[in-house]
Image 1 (cartoon, rainbow, N blue to C red):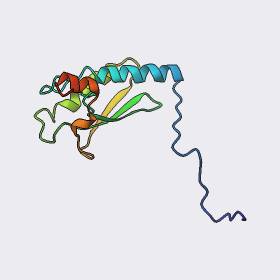
Image 2 (cartoon, rainbow, N blue to C red; image 1 turned 30 degrees about the horizontal axis):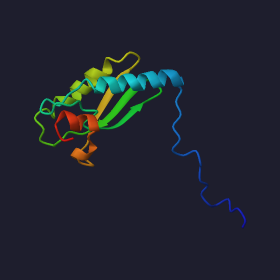
Image 3 (tube, helix red, strand yellow; image 1 turned 180 degrees about the horizontal axis):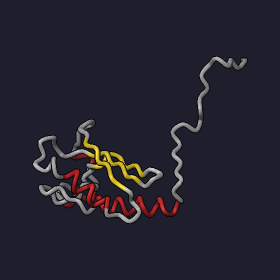
Length: 126
């Protein structure tokens, strides 16, 4: 088999995430961001948004900007307009975070199976 230079080459490093933030600092930032998210509660459910499974993605960029993709238990949630601000304020207070962007999504829609065991216990489903 010969190698044809016109064929697209696959970069085996694709998908590997690297950061200029030192490993220990990134670990601390990650833990502190999760702790901050656990301080935000859905007012209708006695569990925090992290354990409820409302947080779909957390990215900490090299400039320490935190980007969060999240959802709500339902699109018509009464706090839909307020919760992103609560998340931004909680995570923005973490030492070392330069800023926070919160993106709301409903794809995929939230379902109760995203809840942790802790959240299931809190709502009496376990």
